[in-house]
Amino acid sequence: MLKGIPAVLSPEMLEALAEMGHGDMIVIGDAYFAAKTMAKTNNNRLVRADGINAFRLVDAILELMPLDNWGGDPVIAMGFPDKKSGEIVGTETTAKFAEVIAKHDKEAAGKMRYVDRFAFYDLSKTAFCTVATGDGKTNGCIILTKGVF
Image (cartoon, rainbow, N blue to C red; front, side, top):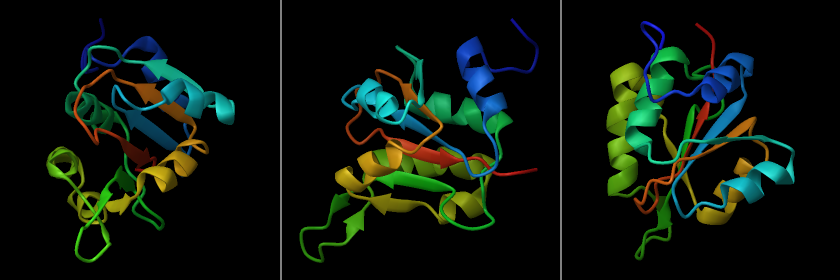
């Protein structure tokens, strides 16, 4: 146990976070997300976080990792098409992620972008690391892009 390091962050997770560079992405997948398939597609690192609540995990990660507000998307969440407009929108789960992210970086939370499932899969295949949480929330998938201090 280390002082100041959230207990939900395993040694493997800490190693992955430390090795990530500016612009690298980490995918947090729910129990339904094909984490191993996405990770092996591009030889991405797979980290298991079974039994860990995805919101708590994102909160812990953001205690240590800055988000990229210099360009691009600091946060990308899996959304669904709105039935009327067809626009990809967030869900109750993504709203809760936004609350957690805002505790650490209000600007990044305000820039959260929503993509459909297939666009999310494509982005996941290019991530540095994929995390399988086992969290049973639907749409509990999010991508965080590492920034600089």
